[in-house]
Length: 129
Image (cartoon, rainbow, N blue to C red):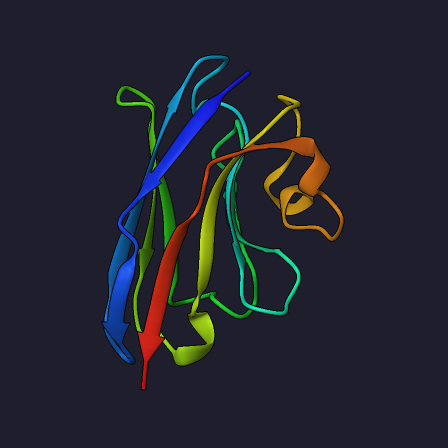
């Protein structure tokens, strides 16, 4: 089992940037499929970015070109660099580690995948206009 702790949430103005970090402990650390999800008030949790064990990366269309996911295996960290933020990016952001080694980055962002992940506690990001 993997334990995950996110950091970096806070308030930012529209157009600004915000980096998020997540440290993993236990299990395979960050070497398997890792992802960032978010959940806005009144909405379902959605995957926004993922990186799998082979280093393949995928993004949700809503964040493609603005968000960047990266991984530092030596430090057991994953990151989400968020640029050109919009008010609709306001949400709780969750770091997640797939329970199965062979999950692909594309699969990780598919609908209904939440049960296949270990989760962090989440960090709030608020984007003001």
